[in-house]
Figure (tube, rainbow, N blue to C red):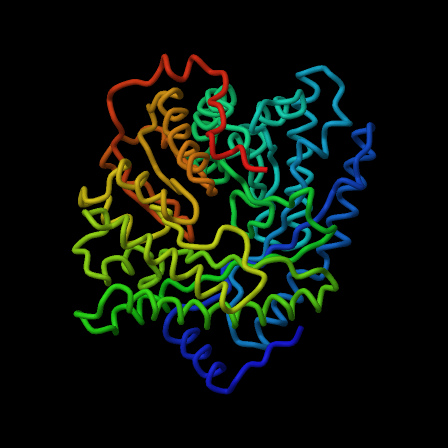
Length: 461
């Protein structure tokens, strides 16, 4: 369906791009690998390689052409695949050691395919295990530290909770150990930055590290992640200091409308060029380390002295809701996560608030009740116990389950680092100060394992 774009909108888009850091943060091509399934591992690998390369061969080139045509930067080009545990299951032997080796080799194959296609990342090395883990799930989870540690472009995920199923606490306990192994087995703990734990995972997420191609999606689908913290910050800062909050929400909503219109134009053009279905627009404000490209700074522009102080959750709720409303007015294809990300190391405003002590792990957890994801890019002390990691994950998953929203956790225990020290990854991953955690332990709670039942609100039919 063609979009009617006015000259005024074209000028506004140019201004947002040139002056306010507006960009398309990610275009992500989802690929269904279920037709590649085989009980012979070598056959499976050949089919997967052929399918990915045939589907994605022109992806980066086409994206660059659309970028040049419209003058709106497309920052990242990514692929997602069907959750790897589903693809691998039929080719497993029942021998745990051999099957773990196959899972690692499969990850390395995906890495080579991503490199050959020229994309930044490939997501989907993961599984859906909200109520329990199959043998294939267990094999894949056990392989994660080596698989993600030995690849550059492959990202992993696991969904361990949903509002319909509750929380798989046995899986949560295991993942605390996996994250510890992953962080300590990779340089500067970078491996843990490529792994996400979900509640209520969505199948059309264009962002990494948690993106995957859901089984309910079409064979090949293009999803797009829009980003515009700089644009929103500019309009909030330009507003009169005495402007009422509902009027602030209105100008954010109008700005999100404009951003979404531009994003849909790019997404539809690229999908048409590739000959694939246009899927969804994710409207999440995704910050970067660039000056002015911070969600934290938007909240401060609303009137907070420092993000993390009292009122931060309310300000973030206003922002998230206004962004969603503006996007829904502009497009019928809003999906993914949509709202506002608060990744600590990737957002200069948040990182500085952690350094000053204004933003704590507890306040971050409170803010995740209203943001679009959850505890994201959180560096913690390297000696954090695995049960503590699991308990933090359980808390965040509970927020998602009880509020029927997607929540996610990306914790990074940095070896040799203690609370208050700084860790730097460079590039989009940025830098941050290690957050202090509670000293009191949660060991016996995590050791109980089992499952936290779904809430009463799950019984809707």
